[in-house]
Image (cartoon, rainbow, N blue to C red; front, side, top):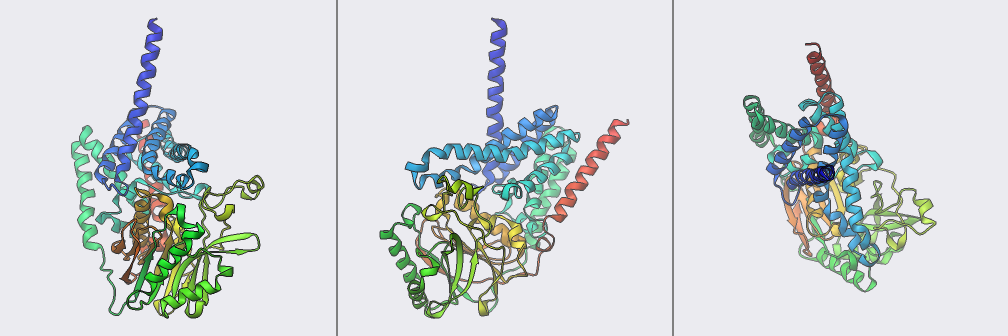
Length: 500
């Protein structure tokens, strides 16, 4: 009886410990948009680091990393259930499995990072370096999904400036270093911890002082942002699609003629191949201004999620095909095989998966300059911007965030757009179907916006571009070098201790 009781107590203890670890991860996620509680992210990561120091063995470290990561991603990714609710009768049952599977899968990177840190002897340097490397890997492997990195909690702070040098990995390293310093200050090494935190805090006013002025120049072009607010469950219904198209045409024709009109992703409910009359009507509404819009097109049996530039008379001068597609949304891995048994991506139209475009490109917008086009999901990948065949004058993002719901997903996507602008030193024109449509300057500051869930238009002056940033030129290379240095120092330190 005593042995059974002890076993039950042990099981209960492990159960509560698992809940605690999940809870710590969820606390760390509260720095993500729209909550923005970045001090709680530092607190959660500090507790995470303290637990990492207490465990012995790489298996225990992996378990801690995986559970804390799962808690973090469960909260940060809860919006992922929204796409399954668009057609709840068919896909609703998948929602909880998708959320749990995605959260647990992404948390494997955290678990692997902590396991490797423990193998290398543990310590602060290994903790920061391996978690940083794990998050970089999360953005690359299996097409990548770098959403909701802990460092994203700093996007809406003056520390965003440092992303122009070190990118998203730099912000992640800053917040991990702050968490480590906080733990050591509270846990006994008050002097060193306080000094480290003071050094980190100094980066805040320094970021304010060094953030350049990125406002518009005299005579800067005016861009009209058009947000139709078409709910996803109504967007493709024939009886509603025409009304949404007419709404966008009315917004385009309102007031004075701007220099450019931008509509969101898949804004036109006809194929580009057969859209002659529709595009003529769009051009007539624009009264001579070029219109950038999202539309689908096909080549044989392949279909593409595209962006087109429409000029006078409905003439299409530029076309860009989205090349970084959403796995399980716009395409299915092994899609040609799965299509034979009727399995397609959730966001694909008429049951067909999209094909990927040829890659990053620049489009010519005449007097406005050259734009780097992005469609939706592509904006979360800094490497897709750096892959452009030249320096753009602006970033042009069209998206349909109706898939992301109304709570956190659209705001997290918007935050990452601000991060991309700061990293590249380029203004961004961001137009979303349901919002948030925004003009973002080259430091990541939002200058104009149409709120989430509103239908309307907004004329925004295009801010100027800044000189090429360090991050735009070198990407993640400086942070990879820093992580390698931290790991080398960690190994050297552990080796020196072993010889004492």
